[in-house]
Image (cartoon, rainbow, N blue to C red; front, side, top):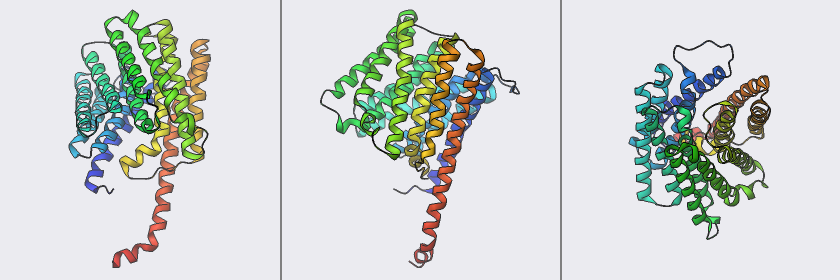
Length: 375
């Protein structure tokens, strides 16, 4: 499939806005670690979570779905997400940025509606739930809720979206009872996140149970259980997936066992288990598939892609076990910095791999250029 240059030009600034949200969100993370860094004019610390989850991950998800739909108008969804992230950076948690992010969620739901008309199924149902969770999170934010109060909705956005995509990949190899169990886990997740807003004290326990049900399905039925014994890219993807599921299980246990968390070490552990250990690990291992589909530039697998993945999980383990559980503040701070460096290292590795692949392609095409010109 070829991509018209004009259509590709629309995708690049949208992806750049998502990248801007990531970089500013990482800078906000360093500020939250109390590092002596220059403070920006706006309070980035207050929008760190929405920048990372909705501004960065949301833009990526909406862009990938817009490309799958194949219409230029669908790019409005990731464009609104990227614009909302830029607005949050420039103005802080103001109405304009929040409304843009809410509009992005609505447009993403419309994309899923069009995709559902083409081919309905439980995987799209799960991804639609993820988009609705994004919408619900922005509504709660607009209504005056603090970010920690709608973290379960942000978590549902990424978990339901990724679970739906994994079901889409695994459906051919699923046993007959695989889909009913998936729908049961999705129902538990939906009930739990709804209860977390209606009855926070009890709902957080139920949400944790819903997360554990989802992790249980992913662990039991995902093809990663088999591909982890392969080599190359399939094994790299499987290692990242299974590691991410372990972090999501930890977050589910902490929510199910201890209830709501809106601050302190347990909140830090839950937050980063979901959005670093699970979500960022998913992005690391899916990037060789997603970025080429969006940019039409190859991102080949290289063994050194394990380096940032290992740094991410190792530093997060130190942060949660030593920093949060044992309360060793210096280790918590150093591990947090290493978390940021792991993400930046992956970005550097991805850029190097894409550029080297591009040069290799150019060298292989160059000798045939005169013949093509004659034809």
